[in-house]
Length: 161
Image (cartoon, rainbow, N blue to C red; front, side, top):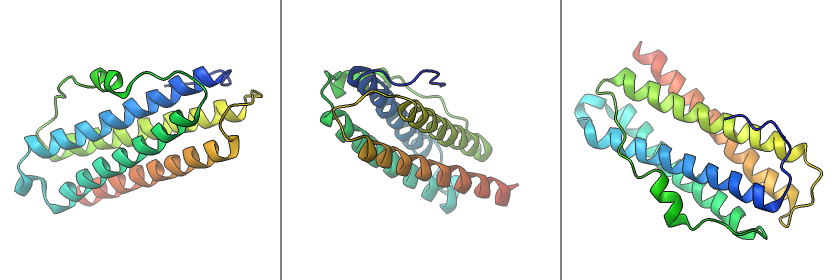
């Protein structure tokens, strides 16, 4: 996803943050789906740990982004409505590489989303109803954690190659 324009309002910021919430829900759901559909012994301890960590991290990211949305002076879509956007079942590959490539894609997508969102906020001259420094601090921390996730998956892929 590319954000090509500066964020222009609290309303737009709220929607973009809600996209981040959906993205985190998708990552969490996919990690759980891989764990449920593949045999734990077949996956190995390292991939099981990776999937568990990814699900926990995504849940935490979603919570932090949701808190930002709640601070905005904008109407937000109810979380239950957002959840329905990701309620579809996810097909997952049944081999190690499929799981790792899927997880790498999830981590890279999340990183790119947060990176683009940070840039769009930085380029905006709008005064939001939330403290800009706090907003950017939270989003930068999440982006850094996504960077670490990409590195972890990549290292695991290299050790299994």
